[in-house]
Image 1 (cartoon, rainbow, N blue to C red):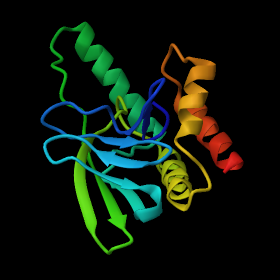
Image 2: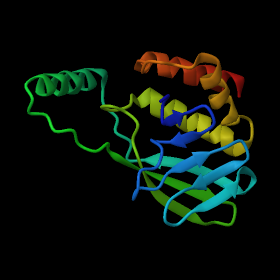
Image 3: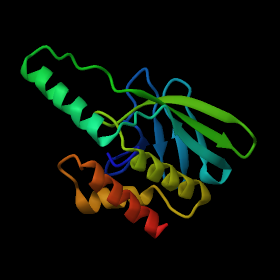
Length: 165
């Protein structure tokens, strides 16, 4: 996971990959697709905007305190994992339509505001055609990350992609 993007060798999702009954939003070099019970897809040329709202954002201090409390609760064996927070993806088309779909957050506790801002900026480049989700899968294939990146590392990767856009 880098910012709002869940990256695999061949696929890029906003939030985590779909888990029934929650749909997913798949990004490809050619367009955007909502998966699930009511699948829809659009080529990038017909998408005017993509926005992700209700993103869990916390300060670094709050994220660390939440992470420490979660670890302590797990060690004491009274922690029951909850589901990830739900976010909303809104796809606005050139025809004036607005399609809303829920997706699950990929952040263990929350994103930094900078990650969210950089992710939205990269989404805007996808919409304008000045960047492609293919760059994200290419990065995954090149680096094959085996551990979860820290927030500053994720921000640096997002900044790198934006510099190339």
